[in-house]
Image (cartoon, rainbow, N blue to C red):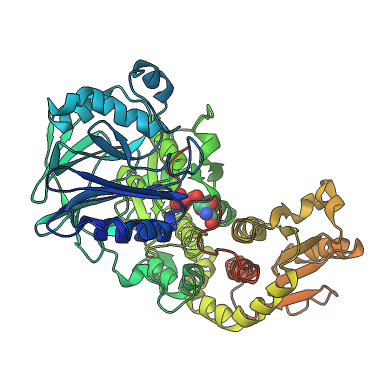
Length: 608
Ligand code: M6R
């Protein structure tokens, strides 16, 4: 979603702002802009609709050696993507960049009728509000920002500069991340620590309700109630190499191919194969707390939700007397759901910043329920606000389509379920097969990716021109089918929906015709024969069926079959999902689409 960068120091501010915005491109945006101030406060403002490359073209005519500035990539919420609506917004002496949504902007705008608003944005209203308290520099900028924010309802991460004081930047956050990079003779600002890599590894993560006044050599943090906050400087763990393509054409393919290693990182130190046990320290629950768990609520959006649903099918298989409810965060936050006291909530998020998931976390905490994060981004808001957590440690996921996070989230949650089962005294012979397969999974993932990368590439060529796809599965293959359909639709723009095989006859079977193809996941196991019959029913109606199976026996005359040969049985759907990931990638590639940054989408959804 929107990105913020800022700089104050001795170097060229434009250089950092542009390179920082490039690092944030993956988050999704539709316009961009930067403003810098010279030593006298004279501003140079450059904005554009479109991409950073367009901004760079404009900057070529506006090169400055200013030492302070702020920049932004905007993902439109209020008003279309346009140069006027792009940030930074200037009102009077104030320049502001803003992530989030000011909910009461209409009301505030009415009260600020003396201003001539140029854009349709809520952010420009906030800039005007700050200007109204600033009174041309009569008061310190930070005071004006605080007064304005006290009247503001909604979410924000902001960076503000004033032409009257070209030596400081004021930043604040409520619900939208902001990181301050502490360098030597320079201080940097970003909404995502990846923009700071290569400049500094020392970072201060601002908390909600905090405001900071930043100069090249100082960072002074206070709460909105003027209480001083002592800044905690933390080391950024991500390396520069981890956010580069490493020879791949796209981050998406890199991230799919990284899964053997990224899953190994998830498992590191957490699996005791000899004893058939897993050890998850992060949740911080005692044996007796684990034994008491009767109910799990798993909260997530998109892929994180699908991973939760997949894990729930497994947890129910081995954790006795535990019910598992998997919920979509954007719905759950407004439901009047009763959560029994002996529950634990798993809050699942790759970015750790998803607004709806974060809102659920806060609601659930209010009810006194223990929250456990299944998060990737270290130091993210969700990771910091949960009571305990298990980082999945897959490294930065840059492509908008989530892949390696899905695999590790699902496995981490299955491991959490195993932890509960162990505490409840479930016999090792029941749990050991799951633990064994988990430990073998990274190697098996490598084998499947190596074997099927090329064949799936060819397969995708044949299906790229379809407008519709139906993904099918049952039991653990059903959430996997949902994830496959999500991947295909978000990057190839093919209308793809998933159905449980058993639901076909209740409606979706009517869709089967030449405009559709069917992508069916048919794992061996108790329901194999039933799934095969369902495939037959689709074939009988002229379906164009691709089957992914781990059964040697499968012999129906479908258009294409991918047979995974592996001794992974229980977790076979996780391997099948790799085929769906590759298929989505190669279909989008064959259609010539922007694989890493699909239209209309953002990597981290920090607004409702
Ligand atoms: O960062 P999160 O895991 O909270 O993100 C949740 C969803 O926005 C995300 O999984 C989204 O659905 C992906 N684009 C799917 O590939």
